[in-house]
Length: 166
Image (cartoon, rainbow, N blue to C red; front, side, top):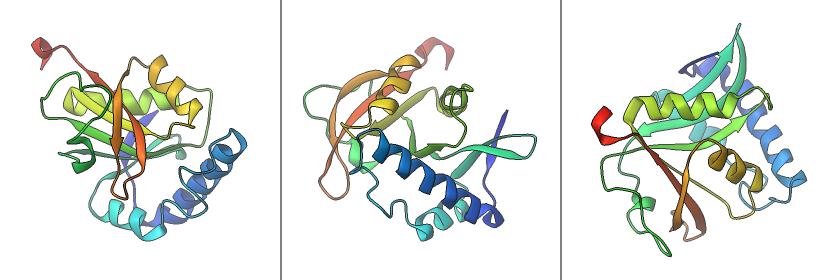
């Protein structure tokens, strides 16, 4: 498997992966995180154009799509009921959707993002138990609760490499 930046001609395929992910979330007790329309097509188009939308692929087949950027995400400035592991600069993963489950795809995506920055933050809906399990299985630490742009709460996780290796 390898990670690369998504291409605009893949937009339809990526939107199908997101539609499948929404259906999976609804089937697993999480109908409210992405509703029936998130992420919108224009947001993914913008992510691609900005070079922030990534795909995990093998032999030309896309297994996952996600947003990765090393940035100071405003949603992560205040954390409730906990604390971040550190206050070093960090990368974020958002909008991860795995098309092929059970092949270590999520781990591969997380490992890629962490290798880019050494300090990674991610959040998910309280009802997204499959994502919470994936994060914990991959060494992320639950840190507390953050609020996203519209005020909704999300549970936040972080994973950091030892500062001595950065």
